[in-house]
Image 1 (tube, one colour):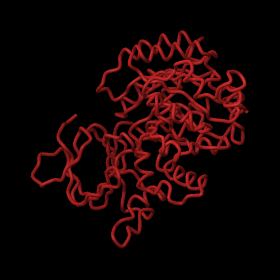
Image 2 (cartoon, helix red, strand yellow):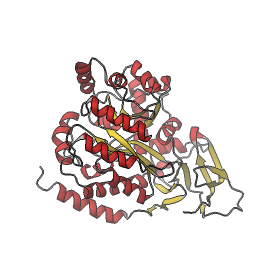
Image 3 (cartoon, helix red, strand yellow):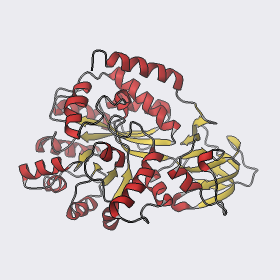
Image 4 (tube, one colour):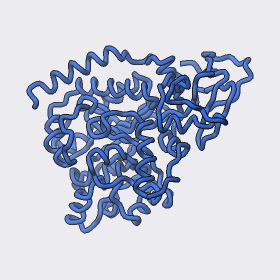
Length: 418
């Protein structure tokens, strides 16, 4: 991989906060950019006149191998029926090979739609980590921990033992880091949660957990412990800095303040919450007022809008926040883009020669609004100075082979399933 920058000539680049740059720019391997004088040594010199450059999308809650389940065999089920009658029985037969195929399909979709990072939670995490590494993508790969038997482990103890070994391999500069994905307060008892937290502290790893996704989860936790989920996790000393709390929808303001105190990350998953009719989504203004780190995620392809398209997720996040709070000023395109790309060190390059991106506006100022609310084709994706996609072609994965592989896998996997 070369450290030389890439030059885009006569282009438009947007960095965080809607900072707009036009002209000739250099994209550096460390994630920075600079203006180009035209005489630098570069890895590639590209005509950017029909291109829009932005930070790449970051997907902060996924179950990547669920691409294998991305068909509506459970469409119309409420969450707990969806889990207990559709997902859990189906996943009981999952194997490393199926995870590899599902993750390869997910990686291809990420690259095609301009995402360079996923915070994942799924079985056989080392397999997913290998897939993302080979594809050139970044990941925070959480191995699942649950008191129920998992396809990959008979109990929580053996899952934590594997994660101990994986966390020991984390290196600061690796594209993929491993994490501990305790499923939820309803599938992990107090001892399991504390053992996971202690492991995260000892190995300097991150925790990833579903929190307060539904009213039932909240009511059940309160009935059992006298506390709401975030309160309960706080009371037992579960949180470590950077704990990823997926959904975090049904919370009180004091719980939001607890998440801030623990430097946790809350993940807004609007399409998943809406598709499964959870009755509410994360209230962004309350989190912003408290100063909590909020990111955006699609959830798994079987639960969300059947995909991993973060542009579509950013659009939906903007719309649902405005709808829920009766406030049309919430999450304009600039802010939605910042939410969806927060923390990105990489670059996605979009096709301006796309009817969805026109008109550009009298003052050439509609780029981000068009991208967020209409969409565009991702032409190039640069991660750490490596091109994963160029001119609309994915370079690090064979999309056609993946399509054949996943179709054959699904036909076999669901053989005999109604």
